[in-house]
Length: 66
Image 1: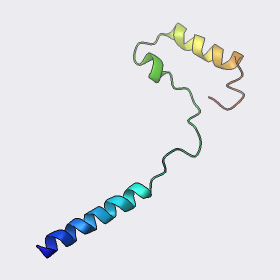
Image 2: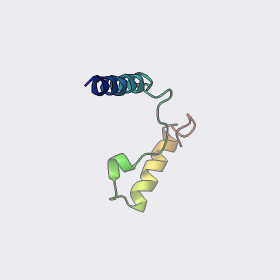
Image 3: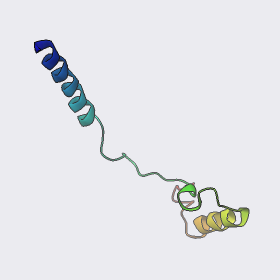
């Protein structure tokens, strides 16, 4: 019985350490071309060109979004 609680305590300790060892947010935001979130597999070449042209015309490309 004591071994059972000892083992459970060790598992809980590692679980707590694992949770506290992770950062809640990324150090930098994702800066990139992530059309999958909007279009998924339903994207055409013309839609892709529209997105790229919009990124260039709004200055996102020059700001580091690529």
